[in-house]
Amino acid sequence: MSFDRYLLIIFPFLILLCALIIEKQNFSKRIFVILLLIQIIFVFIETRDYLLWNKTRWDMGRDLLSTSNIKDIEAGYEWNGWNLYRLSENEPLGKFTPTWAPWYVKQISKNHQMKYIISFSELGGYRVIDKRKTNTLLSPIKYIYLNEVDSKK
Image (cartoon, rainbow, N blue to C red):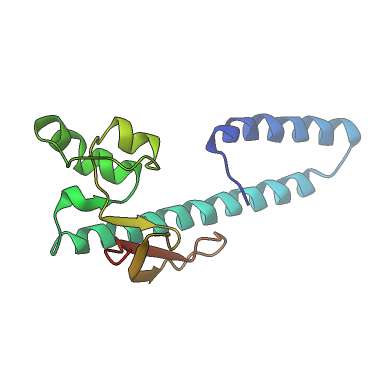
């Protein structure tokens, strides 16, 4: 399942197009309203799921701060922007950035060593030290993982 938020701009036009087709073909307005309500419910559930896995990710990151340095945590674009952007302007985050790091790590938080990565899956070269359920309804993302660099490898 793939999701691209930039396609959301099409939805209002699709709804308008459906309304015009229904009007010209003499379909029931009741059917249109039912379909529209289904779409609204779907959007609310997916938004809830998105907020739940983000809450889980941020809670996990905040809990990790009690035992780790903020410079060691990679928890996604929002986390890095909120926690590392200003920090990286004033002092280096480390000595290197892995070549496989996402674009935002390379551009926003250079030399981020990513000792801990909070992600949607287990990662190669890392060991899972925490796994939390997200309690989502429709999202395929059921767990958020806290991965620590595996020093044995």
